[in-house]
Image 1 (cartoon, helix red, strand yellow):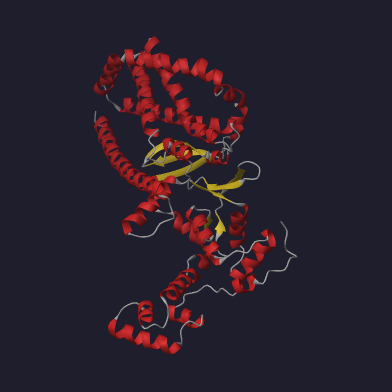
Image 2: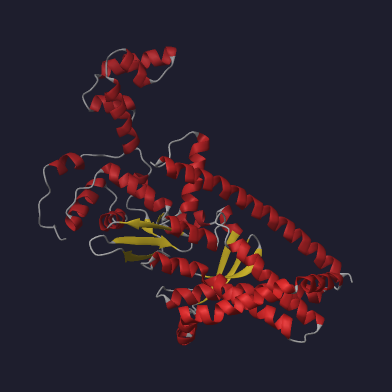
Length: 450
């Protein structure tokens, strides 16, 4: 809608007089004609001698009504909001992706930053305001720009709320120098990514094979029977698996330790390949693969944040489960090889490792309280984007006794329960990582001395 030639309505003049800044309550009441300066001076004198809040003193002295003081305090908070300091200085996050979803007449934008793992839905108007917010450093200029582009008058309160949404989601960030400083947050140390390559050319070459491997006939005719047979063989031979595990423990050495980490690397690589394959087949962009340190443990990663641009919920869930789909197939093949092929003890141990890693990965990744596959599936199923970050924000506000976002009773209980369990799970993973690394270095030293 181009309304650049349409004049601003009369009410826009009142809106354009809004001037952000740090104002005292007395200044606002005087400027609004609600209280003379002499009354403010008397109230300040009483406040200095007896203490108390200025607004309560003015109400008690019947200089102002309680509603007038409340409105002035609301204006004070609005004019002093943090967003006005960032107006015209914030920029879009360089790693943002966006796409349109929804049916005709009910379309919306999905905008997110895969690096941060947060996404939000926005209307055309919200996206336009956010974009113009980065180009104008004064509210009157933003008001006129939004009117020219969208034919809508934007209010200061609307701008403050929108900035909070977009900045909290990591979409609007500080200028490059400040963004670089804020990037080194301690939480990033728990999950550091090192990009290596763009997998798109390889996925395109494998396209026909990948598409065939995720069809329903393949699932029912090949993948399903493979997993069922492998599960049956593993259950039937569970005593032999225990024997092989004991053999590996008894013959522990640097070679066995290397075999274990090679098995981990292969299993994780297949897992990440599965995410990439499903995302590519369903039409989502796959931008990069690389190495990730998750709680200090090296593993692969694949950026499939583009799955959030897929219009159907079932497609996004399929991408989240794609890693386990291929990884379980790898574990099933390892079980068949272990059961039917004549292998030396060390090779049998490698197959057992792949089987056990697959089982552990299924349990670990389907946990919805860590930011892994199960979390994204759960968030998509209940239809609440950024469930983890919003739950943690709600939990912090609840503990501090502060107001949080407006929620229904059911959502408040959900955020409280998920935030608590998510926090417990995160700390449990940190403790597990510390113990695992301690065990690793202990064995490394012990094996090196043998």
